[in-house]
Length: 442
Image 1 (cartoon, rainbow, N blue to C red):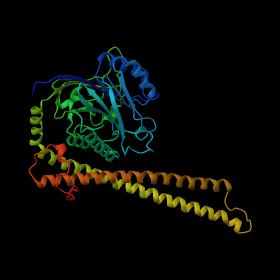
Image 2: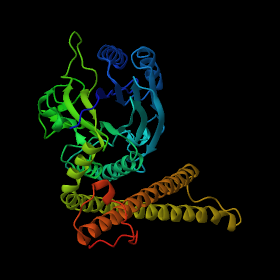
Image 3: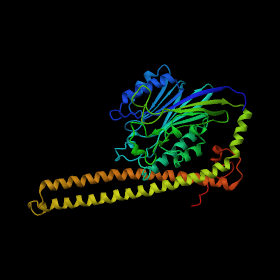
Image 4: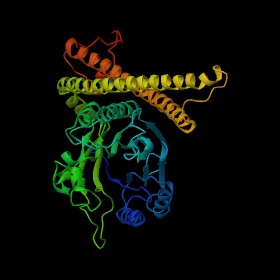
């Protein structure tokens, strides 16, 4: 490591569980969160589930002296729920909304209405360009029968694409948020392997927090322990991930989490535990940057082989979701045809008295109208469902096509030559070669 200036960066992340009128002690908890952030003076604060913009503005006023720069990401019906506060000036911001985000008729889950997305802000920390991302992926409501798994895998796929394509000029990259993914889940492995992001919990030199780094603990009074089965103690689904570049080396000096109820208060900040990471940034000389890049090259082949397996596994999950979506679309279409047939039959029955020189209607009028309304409701509902499932099918097909191309490109490079390039360059066509990758072996 060359002599260089060292910068210490404190990053905070919390899922605030801020559903107005539904989340317990919402106003009091926001006041506690504001006091914590004012006291601790983190450099970057990344929040999720700040569903009300009024709550964001309240935090903004409270943090105006310690975190003068902020941005609230708006999306969906009730908003993305994501907010960023920073001691460093925010020069740019962008939001990418995931193409799949659950089902609108699952209103009790609410993910679809939130418009889940990934937000990006660009900061200048000294002379370094920092790309900071905050996200919140779709929740897992049943691990054994997870009907949302294809959606969450596609979200993880789009997340890693977004990070890779928008961070090429960054000196450092930070991603934080509630990923709703266990450490070894497919989506987590896909994200970390493809982007090269490092997990602060596994990389830190010092950890102070809940056992095994869990962020959704069974002892939290806002959580029903039955929802955590079969994980008795809890699960780790909130993360602070980071990576450097050829110019900057990053180490996680310490990571801490809150531990349930706040001292002198009867309840915690949220149903999730907050994370605080102390990162050390060190600017590298040109030679040190080349040495670090050479280290990446040495393990590129192993990373590519692992990445092929992960993307293939993700593609399989997407295919399963695609099959289910196509089947649901067919069911909606068939039900709609039946509703149309019933409506036409009723219209034919209604025409009988008119054709028979105004004979009396053979059915009670109230029942006749009720049946007509029912048929019309079936037609409208199935039509909307057919449109929704068609959109889901197209999104899944698009993700599957992208994964197929990625697997083909990675397999081509594994077959063609000894690898001597870093992972982020190996995902591009080689000079003089056809940019169209080979089809992967099924």
